Amino acid sequence: MNGVALITVLLVVAIATILAVGMLRSQFLALQHAAGLFDQDQAWLYTQGAEDFVREVLRQDFDDDKRNSRQVDHPGETWAQPFPPFPVDGGVIHARVSDQQAHFNLNRIWHDNAPDPVAAAIFQRLLKSLGLPDTLVPALTDWIDADNEATGSDGAEDDMYSRLDTPYRVANQPISDISELRLIKGFTPEIIAKLRPYVCALPATALLNINTADPVTLAALTTSMTSRNASELSSQRPSKGYASVDEFLAQPVFNGLDATKKTEIRQQIDVRSHYFQLLADAEIAGRHSMVLAVIARGDSGTLNVIARDFSQKFAAPAASAGSNSGTNNNSDPTMDSAVKAARDLL
Ligand SMILES: [Ca+2]
Ligand SMILES: [Ca+2]
Figure (cartoon, rainbow, N blue to C red):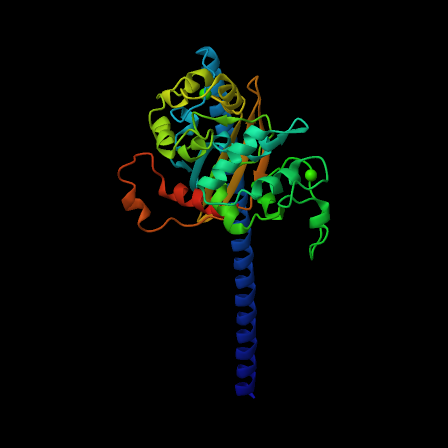
């Protein structure tokens, strides 16, 4: 009998131990889950902190410009520099700001209830230089313009979109995000990917900032400008940017243009910016929280976040990125990789 009692006791002890281990394990998993959520929340709050920091940098820039009576935004200013990784409790924050108005604003092609043929011509030249079809111009125009009459055979309005397998209506208003292009006739994912680095979707009042624009976009400003002219214009840009649009148009490359042509270009360009993009990544305990925010700066210096996108996914930097960054002290391979991943996703 003693033997049976002993075995029974051993069985009870064994079962109790298994139960205890099971309880400990589930408690451990719950703790891990809570810690993960905590880290994620913390990372998210840090990205909000980065947003506040950048708003302050842009406000400071506005005050400096005002004090110097030189309302200009150019790549030499503080906001445009890659911010060094910022260590925080348990992790690190990376942030980068770029000028949205460094790109052609697609909403310029139809605004104030009328087509803008000069902007449409710039877009057409941009498409041509990228090897893309100019049939995209009427398709985009019809998507934005208020009427429902297709522009020629390349345009498209409700009549065409309503016949699709999954029918939808034309927007007949400015596009609010580059991703909206996916809905428009002819804009394939490949075309959008090619176009994305050179265009933006901002309110039509946002003009191209010639102090931040890249040579490809600058070359589209006029038929008389070659890509070589545009590269020279870009590389010979004053270190503090052009102080005015007239100073820019006084460059030799525009000498052949008559007053009318110069006026047309003048209406499309600016030397300052009102819309900036922030990409912030907060890494806490190996977890990343990313935000892509558009910050609008008004004429009086007011700063508002007008768009936030939390769908960005962090991509680890390539192993060779660090070794290639030796020539640039400001280079941040982690952020370079994050920016690329964000661009690929948008
Ligand atoms: Ca400025
Ligand atoms: Ca329309």
